[in-house]
Every structure is written in structure tokens, then in C-alpha cells.
Length: 317
Image (cartoon, rainbow, N blue to C red; front, side):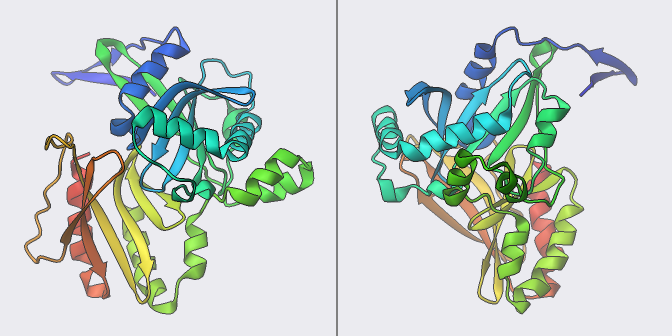
């Protein structure tokens, strides 16, 4: 990625200020986990089994642990490491829950975790083509994010998106690797197609035109989870699309409120003259209150107005 500064219609190149150590990336990400990925920070350098996990986080939207690893070199396999980390997580569930409870001061129980939504996030200044291709499947529980620093304190972050519709099961079944098979039996990375298969006819009639319009929005991409499909811009969620009988529910993120009453940066207020959206809030284990707008999509003639509402959120990111 090349960045420029526009100075009186003259483009001035902004030079890279490369990270010298993995630790520099790690410290910056850990201090900004909520801003970057909407994740709760749990601990750093967590040792469990034979591994030391760089950063451990918890995703309160999916009730799942997220393992974050930072890299500077390119001589490693993200697939092998990713499945090894997930295997360690699944074989040491009690240790992960204990770590969460001790480090956050909150109480998390074993049945309060959706282990099937666990995932590994790799962060590096760059990934080589082999690493990118190795996770180019529709259903791997790994994410690759390129994280770069430029002069004047500028930071860029970009996800390497999968472009293939092929399942990794077709590859792993041939490889015979037991670690991959055991993890795949419990961790289920969800795809958009998985949701589409389960839709009834009334949902399909609403979803396809909605999907087409969302795909046309500038900078938006889909990230499917077990209970919803998220439209996000880079690492930030824009809205969550859920499927209930004969209707589609769209939740637009407003922002968070901390226990002291302060609001997260960019706390969002919707311009909704038709009063189509309702507000809802809840409190996470950390004491932070989440806030969303909820829209019931029941008729196709609502589509243009719903896109108008979603675009307001997208324009703020």
C-alpha cells in the first residue's frame, strides 16, 4: 500500500516507518484492541501447554476467545500454527477461562463460551503469497491482517480477504493431519453460504436484493459468524444481519458506554425520519454497555430507506 499527502494538488509520498520489533506491533495493538477489532483484551504472553500466546482477547459479540499472534518474518506456516493454537485452546479450556477471570476480574463460565467460534488472528507488516494462498478458503478460522506504520504516526491496517469458495475440508481430509481434523470437529468457521442454505423462501426474497445493495457500498465486506452476517469496513463492524422466521433483522452499531458514563469515540446517532429503527442496549461482563439500532426488514419497499440508514453509519467510518 502506498500513501500520499495532497498538498495543493501536489501528491507527496508518505514513507514507511517500519517496525523494528514484533513487540512494537504487539503493544500498539493491545492498547487499541477495542478500536481496531472491537475485542476485549485479556492478557499478554499467556503460557499454556507448549505455547506462549502473544495476545489473548475475547469477542463479546460471539462469546469466543481470539488468539492473536504477531509476526515480522515470513518463514512460517499460518495454517500449521493456527491449528496448533486452536488445538491447544480446545485441550485447555479451563486454563483459558481461569486466565480470563483472573485478568479481567469478571466471571466467565465454561458454558458461557462458544468454543466453535474460536479463531486466530495473525498480524504482520506483510504476508507472502504462500501464506495468503494457504488460508484462501471459505471456512478457515484464521484472519490475516497487514499492519504498517508510516511517517508522521500514520498507521494502515488491511485484512487479506479470502476469495475462494472452496472448503478447507477438501484439503485437510486428504492430508490426514489429526490436529486439523480434531479442531475442525469443534471449531466451525461460518460462511455466508451457510446462512443462505438455511433461509426460508421469504428470507431469500429479502436477502438477495439486500445482499446485492450491501456489496455495492464503498469499502464494505461480509464477515459471517454463526448467528449473523456482519457488514464491516476494514476491521470495524457497520451492521449485523440476522435471520428470523419470515424476516431479517439488521442491527446498526451505535457505540459503547463505559461504566463511568463516557462514550466510545464516534458514538453514533441515526437520522431516521421514518422512525423505522428502535434502540437496544445491553451490558457486557466487563460492565461496558453496548448500544445498537434494530431494524426489522419485512418488505422489499423498505430496502432503499434501510440502505440510506446503513450508509449513514458507513460514512462515519
